[in-house]
Amino acid sequence: MSYSVPQSAPFDDNGDISQDTTPGGDVEARWEIVSKTSGLMPAQIQAGRLQAEGIPARAWQEAAGQALGLMVGLLGTGYVAVPAEFVARAQAILAEPVAMFEQDEDLDRDGGDFEEE
Image (cartoon, rainbow, N blue to C red; front, top):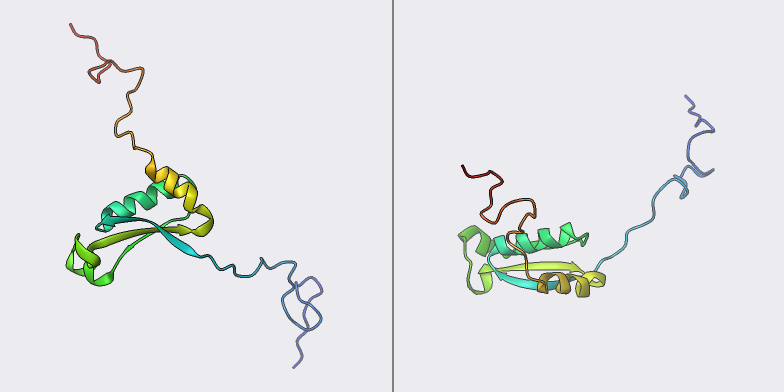
């Protein structure tokens, strides 16, 4: 039994997939810790904030501390890490205060848009 490869297949003469149709190789990223928090939840919030700004970010806590629900000490510390090339930008974003409630210009000062009778 013989098998032939159609000419339109993206193979070289030796049967390997051609590099023209395959994306580039792996790139190693060096992750650096930009924040330490009390517990995992604040670390996840900070990582989410960085991701919303377009920065790849990871949040984690030591497994034993997470399993026990610790929020203090070495096992309770949450970590936020970003690739090395994003460290300065991530630190600047995390240093900015977060506006908890932004006032909508269309609403009255009391928060409602209804007229009192």
